[in-house]
Length: 162
Ligand SMILES: [Zn+2]
Image 1 (cartoon, rainbow, N blue to C red):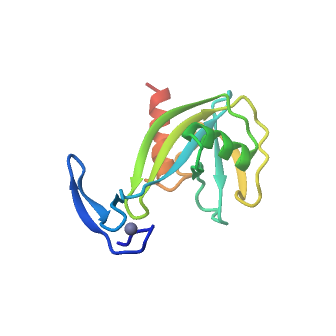
Image 2 (image 1 turned 120 degrees about the vertical axis):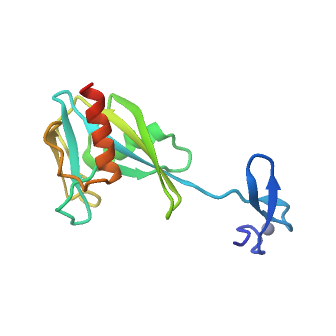
């Protein structure tokens, strides 16, 4: 690993409670490992339907709306923005559900449940191939089993059927 400021090779410095952290002896600066933040949202409407989308010409599996956080943005703002951009929907509520860490890409994916009282989906054709509402009981098998989107849906489904 190299210092992003001066390019010198990093050593490690032992920090209480944090372990060995990459350190640049020239800049005298610690370089904590970077984690990227992204959000994924299960969007539902007042008719108890779930919005599923297709992306990247993949018609086999549907996915949920997701995206990376922009600098200066909160997670909730990102959920609101991505849903508006991808399917043209304004949300009235957004609650945290769960989170998953992708080790390989160092991304923390934060899952939300977003609610709208609008039905008219207007897709951004650059990002979304199609989007539709599905009855909340008619979602199983439409998303790839074990994917984060699938897990998020299952957690949501359990929460409303307690
Ligand atoms: Zn440096």
